[in-house]
Image (tube, rainbow over all chains, first blue to last red; front, side):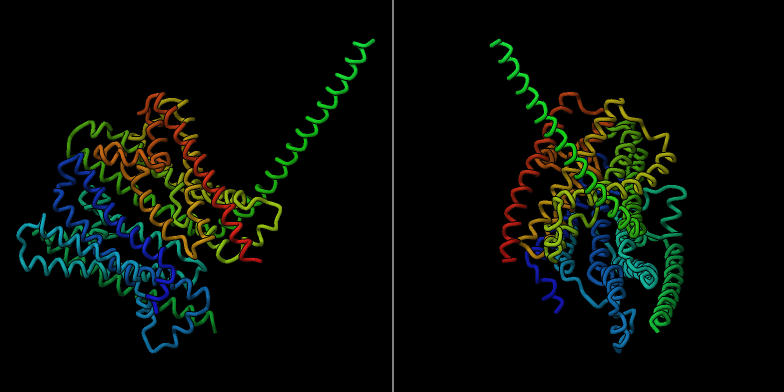
Length: 250
Length: 302
């Protein structure tokens, strides 16, 4: 049904897929141009930044295909049209259903480029890596996704109070885009901000470094605690928002 | 006697011409005044409407602002690592000024949902309501668009002024007063170019149910081809050749080159000429598509 809906405007669907794929390639192009003018970026070589870029694109594709649009755009729309009540009657967790109701097939289709980029990385740039670092990479990637999901749940909960919360969705997109560069470019207070206060480094920099063999165990412990607390907060905020919604409609 | 008579005829003809031109002038003046009144009223209503969504617009602009700050941090890092004064013809203050300027221009031109309204007006039939009103629909959309741009520009300007103050050591003033005026003119013309480009890809809604696909592709290409992420002169030569053939560089790269004084007078003249040719061509194409589309739209109604 979703596929039928999204394919209804076929030329637009294919052009959107083309646009999304081009956007991914533009990130690679941007790095190529930067490295055309400098051999190193905050200590990162091009082949390592390529890994960082595809890590970022993997995370971005995952969230765009799954929960991002559901929470940022479709949830405010449901609330505005009064269709959220119908969703509450379903025998499913409302948060789960609100977050994964529609799988974005445009992003899913364009994500195939990420697989190709991974293939390109392994055949052109990857040096030997240990199985352990790969597992660590996947775990850290998972924590990055949980961090982004929790953050977006907090953002999306505001839709229960405001009429139109789509601006927050765009804001969220721009914020995660800061993760496409190595956070080592930041110094001083900004470095602290992006590592500890608002750990955007978890999106791509931290997993990529782990993959490349640079580990930082105390930081990983911090990350686990931080993600756990943020998840708890997001759950509380969501429940509070739901409560507010129920009382508003009754 | 004969001469006086001829002079009399001449005078009366002159008077008639005078009255005729005075009448035409007055008519045109009134027409212009009414038109302005009409579109100013549209702009005023639009301003009020957008102010209701100011939080959304503000978030949209601040998101772009944060993204631009990261690019600035990247260039600080590159200059720090290379321990050099100049990278690809840019000093650090020039690069920071370029990126801050590009950010301000972005808040003026890189509006995410550009063209959505026109597309919806056509596809949801709202256009019929506009067509019976005594106003030109394209001008109506243009006034609404300029209004929205003005609002996002003011919001963007506010944010960037703070960062310009913080980075004042790295922010350099315009090359000259003349360059500054030409920069402003180029930004304004770049905005008009941007409007007509998206306008064309929105009014193809007369033939397509949804036009966001092509508009999205343009936006993606624009993100790099305007030069707002990185100056186009930093690209390899073959890429620069491609960018020179496209109109996007006039939206950010060209005005910023003028601001920094990195282009000669002849290049400025050539650039403005090309910009005007692009705008004229896009207006021509848009008028042609509009008329064709309107015929198709009216045919549906019969």
